[in-house]
Amino acid sequence: MIYSTTARDDQLRGQLEGLTREDRDYWSFKGNSRREHGHGLFQYPAMMVPQVVRAVLQQACAVHPEIDSIADPFVGSGTILTEAMLRGLSFAGIDCNPLAVLVCRVKEGPFFVNSLGKKIEELTSRVSSDHIERVDVAFPNLDKWFRLDVQIALSRIRRGILQERSLWARRFLWIGLAEVVRLTSNSRTSTYKLHVRPADEIGARKLDPIGLFFRTILRNLGHFTEQGRFLQDHGYLVRGRYQRKIDVRLGDARRPGNGLQTDIVITSPPYGDNTSTVPYGQYSYLPLQWIDIADIDPAAGNQFLRSTCEIDARGLGGVKRVTSDERYKLTTRSPALANCLDLLTELPADRGNRVAAFARDLDRSLDPILASLRVGGLFVWILGNRRVGGRRVPLDEILIELLAPRHVNLLCRLSRRISSKRMAPKNNIADTMSSESILVMRKVA
Image (cartoon, rainbow, N blue to C red; front, side, top):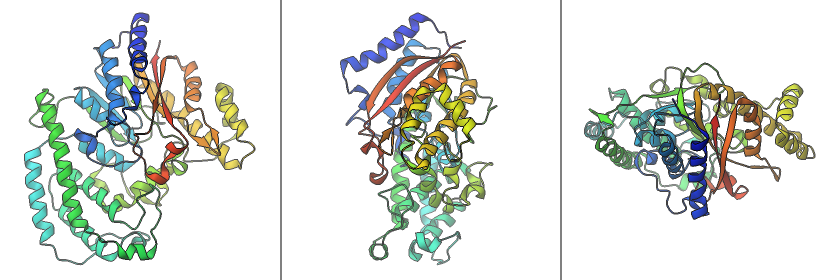
């Protein structure tokens, strides 16, 4: 139960805005955004800066020491999950991308570090003694995306992982393989979209997937050990297991009835539809082909891999068809969206459709998310105002207007430069979007 009063609103607003008054660039964390603990386990697109979440949580918990649980309806690689664990809080999250759910499942533990070290040694022995030249996966355009020698090496790693009996350990090893798949595929790493390299460049690359894999999992073991030691020192672990509730689900934030109840929601939704901003699904497509998807979640299956665009189509704005009635209802409730769409009418129709579809799906997610937030709970959104066709999309204003009739009050709006946000160079929408907004809101009765 969150105890909300006008005095507490004023206190929280004053503390958050006071940090900006003392240092105009406080929320940028430029040069101070090291990815420690579980944050360093996997390189996921457009990862949130942990220090931003940590600072918001610190101030919120100072005003509301009764905060016991956090939720993130767009959980991604689990930045907020990790920060919740570092404070000893319960956590609930959801994402439509199986790879994101896998990373989160690893980050929640268990932290059997000594056992994991031994399992890595056993895996090293299995892979080193495997001289089979069979390729163990098959999917469309396999030879386009991977050289034959890489296919053979990845298959040896995959076979070694599948021989591991413990699910928690296989998951840890799978995310190491996922990163190696991305780095040794024929797709460019300068973009999160699947974009094949020139043939001469593919042939000339010197690749060692097996060596890279073991370097990756040893690096990950270091991060995992660091977090486990921190949690143990603070009394949050018993026999290697985190003692608060963690519930990460593969699903859709727009679907009602998840049954979760939380004191604070902190989230960073996509900047816009995935296909034209950050294609999380395309980024995940090749790694998921090499992972036993049954190890991720009972709800995961090959339906997520029907095409390179399948996962992105399941995200916000993934379906571009917007009816005139849907557009009318949205623009009636959000003058900022109406003005934005008016400015886009002189551009090709798909520009406005992308913005309208994303706004429609974001709006559909709000009621299920709010249903999980207790009355008096805090609602924190970290989001950016991207550009479409050179026109700014005021996502912060649109969100404020869509939430206004839903009994959500804006306490304060903070601004941060996004120079330190981790983006691929050719997906770097920071080129046209230099800042993000942090909206701190409260659900009222």
